[in-house]
Length: 304
Image (cartoon, rainbow, N blue to C red; front, top):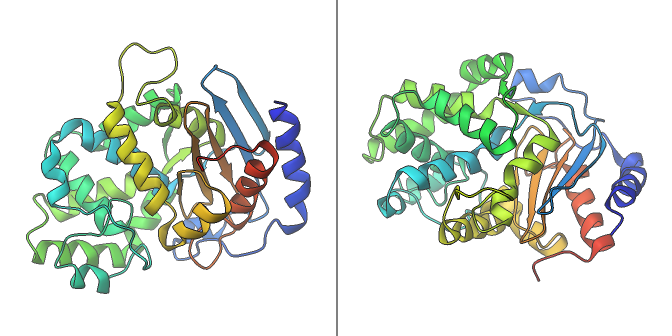
């Protein structure tokens, strides 16, 4: 299949709509990002890479980092992890306080903010240098030792992350936090500030398309059972409270971030990353969702 030609066609088709929506201005450092940028990259199980647009420009991956952290936590922890966080779609905003109250301090899934804070807490319990461990894991998955944190984004989130501070205090009130809250928040804001390119992310997520193993690697990152669980969560919970729309229009496991990135998995074939900073009302990239839908239409690739 002529993937390069398809990617270039997608860019031309969505170009007139680039910039529609709004950047995530509740994080001041993201408010300054040009909303008209767009990149798309594919990395296949055969070791081929394809890219178009701004696919090699680093951006703040935000909640896409929750997949890295969940994979790390599943490597480090046993199944007791799932007594602290659920696996159901939320149906509410990713930073909802009322849902956490209703659920008695057990976050609905690992990809809403409250669930991600619990996952970060579990990593801290098993690592003396969690910020370094998270960074090295992302670098290893991408095969890029130059990946780093965006300090400006980190400081911006640290100064303005009031709702996340409220969420972690709610979690503490239900005895679902084990470590110092400031360390958890610092680690969490660092993970969200990871700066990666579309190509970095496409390469990073190949293990999720390959039963937990990077193509050509002897040692698995996760077991096939663990990988299936993460893909299931991406399908049902990976795009906030718009997961049904993504399943309906795209039909692939996806994880999005308010930095404008979305990563999708085609099992046994490839991973795809799209990026465009302008978001829809539910926090997902408008152009990114449109591009993924076009990609599936043009290639016939989907899990259904």
